[in-house]
Length: 218
Image (cartoon, rainbow, N blue to C red; front, side):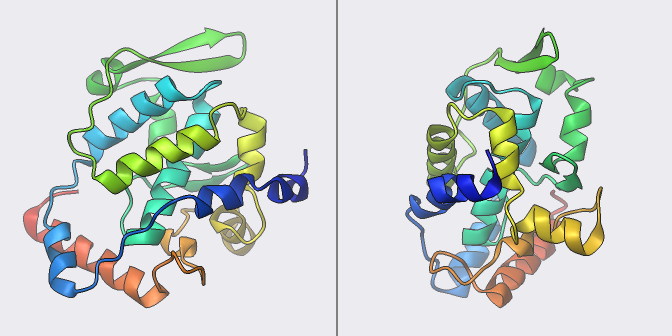
């Protein structure tokens, strides 16, 4: 299935259209939101558990794309990612390199949460623990739920094609910078009604970065 057929079927566009977006209208509200500890590691592990439990064919490749959609759609709305991962332009689409490598040699907290089961060349991500939503906002939980629903039965090859769509963040970075380059979250910003403006997203990203530096969190 080609990119044009996927776009026509609405796989990617539907992932953008079903979300109810929230507007934070004043700077003081944004700063208060930024002061909440990120809990990136806890949210990453539990997002992996959630997608592994709530989608089929959840191997390494599909998981990388589901996390990419979660982080970049959330950044598009709020100016911050959910997991704090950096994504790179690999051949099969955007990949959070550090996590991809860790799945081959897991840290104790991730190893306690999931296991990788080999079926020939396919490596299935299987949850070992229950999903914990303690550190997620309502927006983040809604995004995970909707992404899992849309991509529940989509296999790795199809979801990779979706992440390759022309003029989307992976494609733009690949064209402008080449393979193995970090994908800028600001590339998720566009002219759609649900998107922050570029300047607002950049301002929020800088506010969050400064707050994290002051508090010594990541």
